[in-house]
Image (tube, rainbow, N blue to C red; front, side, top):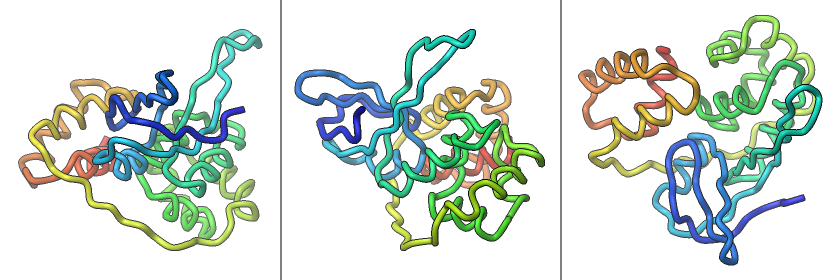
Length: 198
């Protein structure tokens, strides 16, 4: 079992990074929150969660998810322990909100906020709160790292949102509207605003 990876970042995008650890390249899926923490780094340590993929009741492989903090990893693993909440939905939630905000939403039974995440309906939101409220723990300190803005922000946001499962046409429409309102938005800002509207 891999607990963490510590190595050089050779490729990064808002949805995944490739890390060189001892000459081996690991493709690690990440949330938007983790991307904001590592996007300006050349080397990092990520806490790893291995998610087994299965087809027809047999193992077909696994995905490696990486998180900048143990808190985010812990929340991710608790989210996917809930029936009906898969890894993609858990990552979507941690891309829409900070780990502390997810904690707070569950502790305060904020169904509206939880349902705002694609893939979570009323029943899933209720189940998630019911199963995790006593396990999720108290809200801890908050760390905010502002990402740098650059020229390919719109393209990166488009690719990230498509990787999260949205159609190109729907994403482009929303991004055009968001860019017109605030052209200086960072990649993270564009994605977060888009997730609210898609």
